[in-house]
Structure formats: C-alpha cells, structure tokens
Image (cartoon, rainbow, N blue to C red; front, side, top):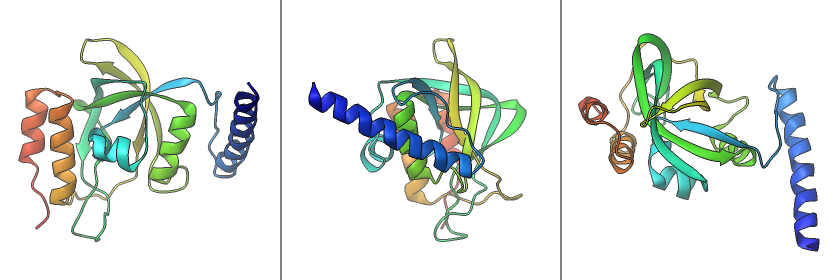
Length: 186
C-alpha cells in the first residue's frame, strides 16, 4: 500500500513536470497518466524489436488498422543523411496507410514521445480517426512531420523492419506488396 501511494506521487510529479515541458513547447498535455489512448504505428514501430525492445513499450493490446486520407512517404532526412529516409505520412484524400494500432496509457505515450523527440523534434502528434481490421473506428494519435518535397530511399535495415512488422501483424497483402516494392538506399 505504501509503495503504491509513493509510486503514484512520483508519477503525478513527473506528469506535472512533463505538462510544463510540453506547454513551454506550445503543446498541451491532456488527461491523466493512466488514461488509455490508441497509437497508430506506420514506420519502424510496426516491428516488435523497435516498439517493445528498443523503445521499451508495453502495449495493453494491438490490432492491425488503417488511416484513410494519408499516404506513406519516405521524405525525411535520416542518418546517414541522403542514405536513409524514415517513414512519414502526408495528406492524400485518395490514399490509405496500414499499420498497427497499439492501446497504451498516456504515460506510455509520454515515454514514446521522448524516444521520438516529441515535442520539439521532427515529429509532432496528429490525432486521427483510424479503423481496425474489423471495421471498428477509433480515435488514435500518430506522428507526422514536415517532410522534404522529394522522397528518398529507406535503408535496407529500416524497410526490413517495416516489412517484417507488417507480416508479423498480418497486414493486408496489398500493403505487404507495396512495402516490398519500396527500393532501399544503396
């Protein structure tokens, strides 16, 4: 009991500091740490090695899903610059992007933000309506960035993460074929 109360006090203090940090960067942190949200992953976070192991995430649930009205692009500068282009999404009324919907806590989203450089880095939150593979509509958060006018090519390691993650989460065959068609940087 004492440990639980102590842990809650620590979380509340950290949450208050995080809210101040976000506010200083022009973003409002809403909700409580234990509130649950859906996060839509379309890039490297499709793969468990990136999402669970490298980022240390522990989703409460996951589902294959899609967002309509967006297109997947590789128009960001990666490392090494010019030889690796990470994934991004851009509005396109005629397109859709498939990925994984992870149910996480707001505290988990805060942790994920810190691994993605949000707020203040390249990506920012985008709240969207997503649809899981069963047709259920969900409000979800994902990341979007201001990308370059021209697309680059992802590294072989990066596009392999997307392909393997898409297969592991049983994304549709058309999406798998699209990912297979993406050329990687030489």
